[in-house]
Image 1 (cartoon, rainbow, N blue to C red):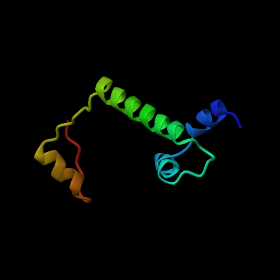
Image 2 (cartoon, one colour):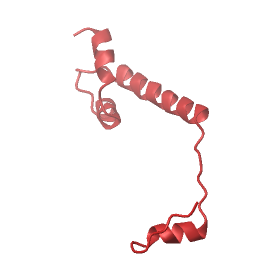
Image 3 (cartoon, rainbow, N blue to C red):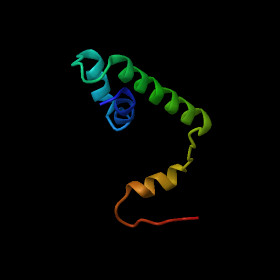
Image 4 (cartoon, one colour):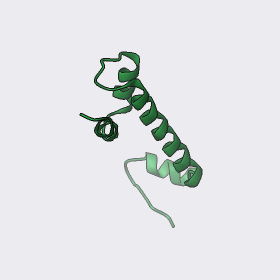
Length: 77
């Protein structure tokens, strides 16, 4: 398998498996490729968070307590 195929295959591997490839090299996956994929994912996650700030929802205490009660659930708008 060539290096480009290995690099593409690593896109389908879990983060934990990539870390294992780095910590316990077997020769099947070059460590620099696993590290590169981990870095690529980290940057993608950071960009996602930066471009998609978390939205917060605000609930009144009354509404929250109604949701916690399983009987007599009333939805007020």
